[in-house]
Image (cartoon, rainbow, N blue to C red):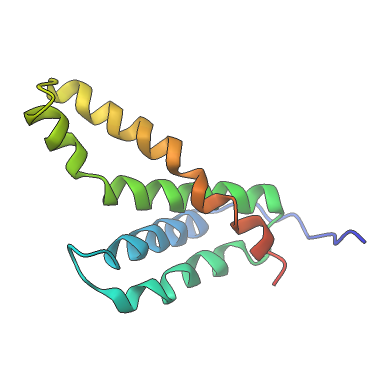
Length: 116
């Protein structure tokens, strides 16, 4: 049984909700210690993907995961610069590459959620 979804394009509001969701996930970690933010963190993402096709939901999940990991792993720039003695102009792109690499971790579960 296949479920047909109406094709709604990804808009700026959906991208914004995905970024907010990723930042709320980061807020639940120890530096900010807002543990209560972990439970409602995915609610903005769920609102963004509720009428999207699974492929578009995957893309928004990728945005949320990338925003989460970029804001969570910011300290790697300092660590690579000080202890690895890499120049700063190399540390920042490495952080972005790492964020793009681990961003799909969040996006793998999102296409299944767009049917609810």
